Amino acid sequence: MQEMVSKKPTELRFDLTAGDGTQVYVTFQNFHLDAGPEYTIHLDFGQGTAGDHLSHGMIAHNGMNFTTKDVDRDPYLPENCAHNQHGAWWYNQCGGINLNGEYATPGFKHPGGYWLGIFYQPYSLNSLKATKLMFRAM
Image (cartoon, rainbow, N blue to C red; front, side, top):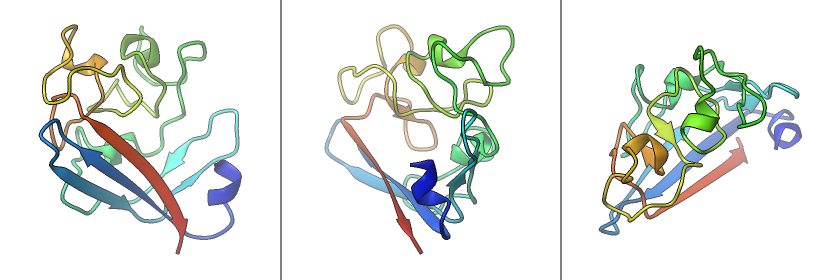
């Protein structure tokens, strides 16, 4: 993915489906990833029906390194956000997005805490039914 988005200006898009079937989206211009092993994410403020927010949207994760359960590269001390939220991501203080969390009953918060489920806080803390991440050259 890093190699594909490093060639020319790229747009990132999230399509999100709520438990009731409602669909929203958000797009981010100037998306790219630095080379590994950190795979630092770079993008502009998101636009679309799902929203974006400086404190808990995807823009809050701009400049973050990709964190996994076995390699903690997030700035949150003393814990590993990927371990705490059960999914790898570009976490900033474990943040308000977890599209790689545990699948839970769509439309409801994960029984162990919303942060364990698949959610996008600018839109909803309830577990999402489906997510799609796409990117394209501009």
